[in-house]
Length: 179
Ligand code: IMP
Ligand code: MG
Image (cartoon, rainbow, N blue to C red):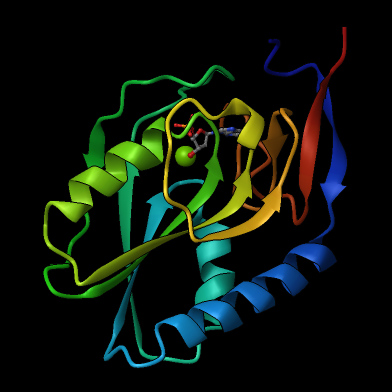
């Protein structure tokens, strides 16, 4: 795919995202109702806008941490190799943890991250992903909250990039290649 000759077409508006984030946050608040302090772990870089909006709607004490793993590079093909580029700073043993991801595609990234963090012995760990492409799934992952199911399209915006561009779009758009 050409990294410069494309346009974006709105798929999910900023308004719909905001409404959905509020609903998700209410469900999460209820689910972790009795937690002392929730550890919200965002997967960099794609989840940074989502996590910022989400934590501001959570009505409980939270701590925010970030994890960065490698996946796509500049290609639209999902890579199965997952390496830790930046680990979280805090301890999660015996803590309540919420993992926040931008998109669940083949599932390999989340599968790997879940196994890795689970081995550190959190009390309760669940996943909230903004987007899900169920038709692309290759490995089963346990995702408790999903913002929107989307078709097999390459999307950008609201933190999500295409070759490091378009993260600053306020809405989610799909890429349309121009020739
Ligand atoms: P998975 O390991 O195949 O589930 O891939 C998940 C990762 O691929 C996500 O964290 C995204 O960063 C990236 N990804 C998947 N689909 C898209 C897309 O449509 N646009 C941008 N990044 C994507
Ligand atoms: Mg990612």
